[in-house]
Structure formats: C-alpha cells, structure tokens
Amino acid sequence: MKKLQVLGPGCPKCVELAKRTAEAAKALGGDYEVEKVSELSKIMAFGIFTTPALVVDGEVKVVGQVPSVDELKKLIG
Image 1: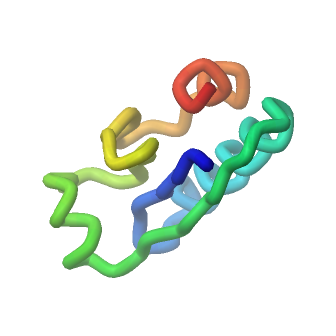
Image 2: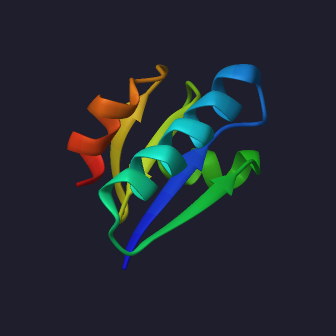
C-alpha cells in the first residue's frame, strides 16, 4: 500500500490537493492510503515551509502547488 500524505493547514489549495490526490488514487485503482496532515510540527518535520505539499511514501513530490489529476497520477503511480 502506498501512503499519500497531503500537508497543509486546511486552506482552499490544501483541500483541493487532497481532493485531486484522492481522485487520482481512485482512478489508478491501486492500494493507496490518503492522509491529511495539518499539524504544523508534522508538516515542518518534512522540511516543508510552503503548503500545500504532497508526500508519497515519505518522499516529498509537490510543494506549493496543486497539480492536475493527470499530473498527480504520474507522481503517485
């Protein structure tokens, strides 16, 4: 199972990234766990200072932007 973590305090862009990430994971049909991380200390533990961000299996893939669903499929696939 791949672990997908959306990092952000809950701003509109963070919410949109979480929505698109879940949509991309569903479209790929694999075994994914999508987790929203909003605690500042946990976000900063990844070295992230700009949100939203996407972490795939512990590796930061996106910072400060909201990629399209198709771009996300490539990043998490």
